[in-house]
Length: 516
Image (cartoon, rainbow, N blue to C red; front, side):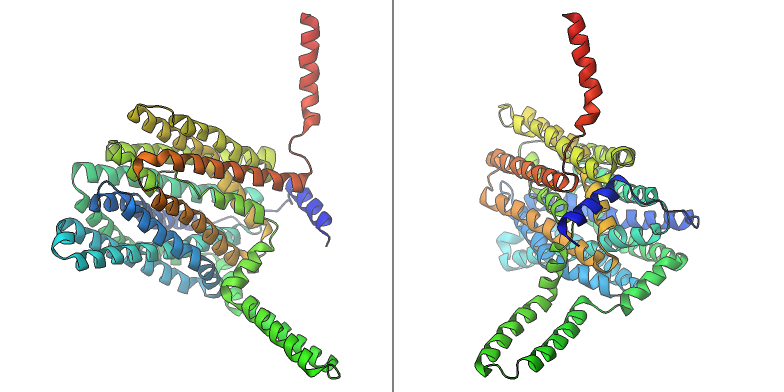
């Protein structure tokens, strides 16, 4: 199919989505099990995500070095192993993925909480036994990164695969609503976990928060597994999809068969050719095919062939930022004298606005469809972030910090609607055989951008120079918005329906002529 035909077909599908009949009623009880299990898993991850920056700034005050180092380790591990995790999720059965995901995630966060407790209980360890201090820091970084990697496997399984399989055969609104509820649960965890953790840190101690993290993951893992396995056993479509996954030949196997057939054909056709030229050609061909069959390279090749690559890159660019309530911004706000519980509340407000985005998104998507919802969303995020840029020129540090938090919090409305729009485009347009692989590469690309943000934190580690990081982050958001706008124009061949503005313009010009 020609590129022009593909783009016109894609535009037609976006404008006139197919009508699916709702064959069987969806099991509401199993849905509740799915949502509760997802909540329990996300709560533990969000507790760690909020706390780790505070732990690191406490272990090495007046510097973002430890916080940025952990961010680099976490992001680099996801960037390197994200595509492999996606391929692993694509090849294993759902039951095996559930077991490996839940055990690895909860065990990793238990170890991370334990090592942090040890570091906090013995604050003079870096003076009395520096090698033990460094060993505990390394163990904290490794266990935290491993926990995040296993969380990625669960994210791909539930958000990119299960919701699509469950919603198949039903109206498109079912998938839209499931995406919104899943994202709402994640943002609710992002709302409440920092608030609860912030109050524990402020009114009890950092040690108590680390102990709470370890206990939560110890207890919740059993309930999470029971909930998810109940969903798997209760929805036949999931069992059928799992069976297809393990019986389907992998892309590398298909390429290997094709390569062997091609080599046999080449050998038959080239018997009379020069032997040295043939040897040289076959050596180059073997190297190229060997590299293309590597799991990491093959996963990226699959991703780059998708029609949604530009929206995916745009979404990933939004992770190259410090304008979020992440490790660097949290540590900087605490350095500026903002109380921890205030940061937790601000982060909670930010998540509440994100939850509002999950409610607004289905309404907006039903009126202007997925592609155009993404356009309005990302430019609304850009508009709210102007408040963060303006905070640079406010000389009173507390006012500047509050403006920064306000700009970040309000921009979450556009950010999470854009996230939902891009995810739904990938769910609709990526084939089932590539769905998990594309999800793994997408998360890997997002982690690469996140890693670059932490590298910026390593280069500019003085909290007084946070304004430089703010400007770079805003510039990257601008680039992401322009790329998505280019994607929409390439598909639709226009950005706005100017013909719909004509009646308003005529009305306006008519009133102007009457007034004159």
